[in-house]
Length: 154
Image 1: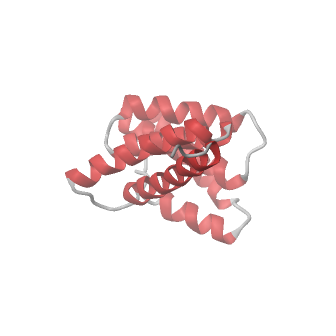
Image 2: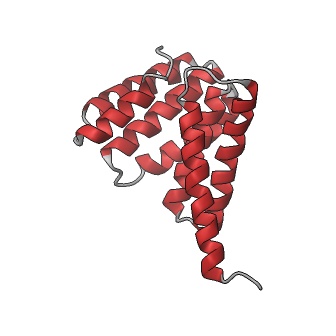
Image 3: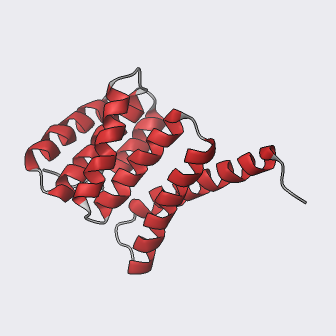
């Protein structure tokens, strides 16, 4: 029996969310094994694939931001910058929640650090720090702070 289009969409959405959560969790660990690094990268790309099948433009941009974070965590600066710039430009051009804009700058700072671009790293680290302090919701701010502390300081 063939799955229905709704079942396929639910499958993609479930895998997108699960892969996203796994990749973010691994990216925020203070240390990872080589196997966890590989799993983190696979999960981030799987999330992007599944969001590409059923997600909105926003879901797909968030997946790019995750890819920027993951590639930066792996020291793959050029790739990280490509993803982080795309997501940052998207959020900068629209009405964006305070937490999401802070995250976009934090990921771009992380990618710039991994790429060895000290000026870009410093610029976006400062913006992320400033925007992070202005996040209105205390829970959103706590989530941001937990992630932001993993971004290397300039």
